Amino acid sequence: GWLLLEFLGISCSSVAVGIGVGLLCSIVFKKSNISAYHTYEVELLFLFTFGCFALAEIWELSGVVALFFFAITLSHYNYYNMSEQSKISSTYVFEALAKGSESLVFLYMGISVFSSKAKWDVPFLILGVLFCVAGRVCNILPMSFLANIKRTKKISRNMQVFMCFAGLRGAVSYALSTQLVAGDRRGIEAIQTTTMGIIVCTTFILGGSTERVLDRLKLKNSADDASSPRNEHSYGYQLHEDYANGGGASSTSSALHSNLSSSFLSNPSSHLLRRNSFHSWWRNFDDKFMKPAFGGDNEYLRMPPESDQLVQDLSHA
View (spheres, rainbow, N blue to C red):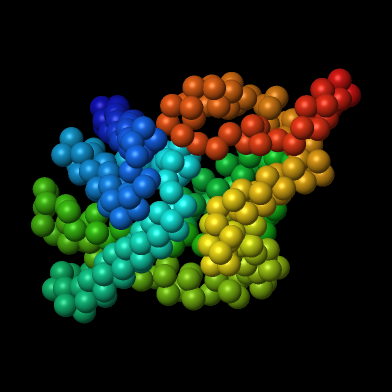
């Protein structure tokens, strides 16, 4: 019981730290004139990111969880406070840093596989892999069932099977296992080697057979389209293309307004559903109080003029 309370306390506190630092960063960007200095803008964003992680670790919380919610908060609020040049540059800078850091961890892990003198507990490793797969099945299938109750576009059975299959254990888990210092040395070595083995198994076996599984489940085309980093309808892609062609941000805003208008006029009921859903109270609070204070994009402020009449007609339908 005490362990569960400690876990919940650390998790909630880490979330609070991430959101709090994210809001602080957003209000600094919004109230200052730093957007006129693009280099400092990216540097300050990096310092806030590192500060969020460091603050959580100093307070003996989860820096990873805090950083995750910090990023969510920035994408929701602070992204719209940044200059267009910094939006592009920060995207590529942080993407390069993330890939480089992950590559270094994988490199360290690969060297450890052959240089580590710790003994491998093979039964423990096999059980670890099986329990990881079983854990995903026990989470994904019930959660997908509950999600499909309210979803108009259901999560197909094939997609649920693939989500259970595609659970890759990342290098971050091995980096966290190396931080273990308390306890029996043999137990720590068993945890580290097992974590390393699970990563290797899931990366090479599950990751290597992903394409074949996509083909067998007939999901390859939809998965490729959804995961394409250069989706022509994405904001970042349009922004990059406009600047490359000399159009600047104005053409991007016009294109986004046009896309939103056509989306609303083609399927207004989906937007009405969002207004009348259970979380509409948060959307209203966010639009009225949070976004004016911290920044953000109010979708409904960019609705076409004819949307109000459509909403009234649908409300009385």
